[in-house]
Length: 326
Image (cartoon, rainbow, N blue to C red; front, top):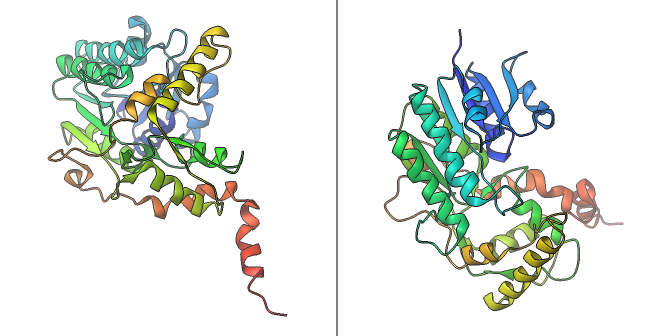
């Protein structure tokens, strides 16, 4: 019988790419998610019955244990960018990650991959970065041979980075940024998945920081994105104190509406993160150490951002028509 991997958060942005790669290798894939009915799209990644979404609450021991029953390896891709009701950074990214590792060790599972993030730091003023670091500590306490991946911003067709800013560019003449000078090193989602596969197979261990071949400021990446979608916008860099005021207002609105309106614009914790560069650390093990050539953003962005152009797929035709002579 083929081997089985349980991927917690396997229907998410990164998790689905790992699931697809593992299915292609012939593994059975169990995708552990909160809402299996919304993860049906993962089934065609393999043959009938090879990829199955199952119900799992990462905050509950019994639920997590059921999802990994009989598994040969586990992958944790569960993470949140902002807190919402019961989903807090500590309960999801710290306690949840530790729970998976503890139960995997008890079940005798030898291979685990944990998705963390560049900037994970137990001393960080950011609750997000702190919870990521504590999650790593919890994983390594129970699974010392685990593979931990720390990606920078991950990009790809379903990303929440370039897609988000491209959508915002349609709303007005300017695209204001907080932390416009902060550096990022976006990494392609399938490169992250390829790295994770090596950990699932037990080929590598340890901590790897994953970044693309180019690092530049947030402002620089946004200008690149604007060039791809053929839009001209002012890109002012707002001072951090202005960002804090805006984030405070958005956070307050979420609290006053009891979570009915979710702050997906800018949180105070995200402002703290934006004060520090999000790039691969000097001396860290990287994609190159895994034998993976990092995919440049320029090779991929046009493939999925074209829909944000003023005329969508017809923009190129209109540009070509301008060159016609009577």
